[in-house]
Length: 114
Image (cartoon, rainbow, N blue to C red; front, side, top):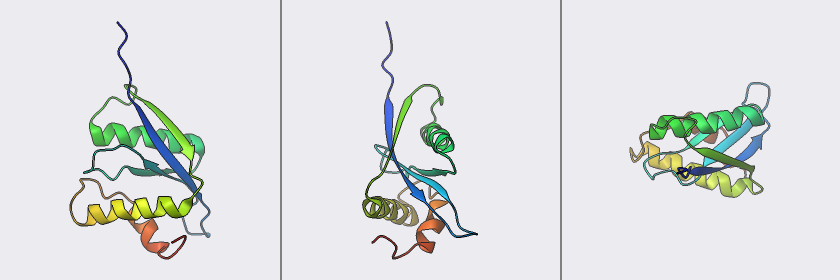
C-alpha cells in the first residue's frame, strides 16, 4: 500500500537589494504549526526550494525526502510582508521556537510595501 505524502505550500517574493542588501527569494511556508515562523530565503529559485525543504525538515523533525513542496511566486508583496511581520512579532513575544534571520530584513525594510 502506498503511503500518502504531505505537500507543503510556499510563496516567494523576489527582493532586489542594494549593494550590501540581500537579493533573492524570500519564502513564507504556509500551513506550519503556529509556534513556527516558517520563513527562509534563497538567492536562486532552486536554492529557495532547497531552503524551503530544509526549513520544514528542521522545524518539524522530518526526513527532507518524506514530503513534497510546492513553491509559487507571490503576486502581492504587501500581503506577504504583513504575514511575515506577524510571524516575526510572534517570535519576538516568544510564541515561536524559530525567529529566523528574516527579522533583520523586515527591520531594514520597515515601511516598504505597507
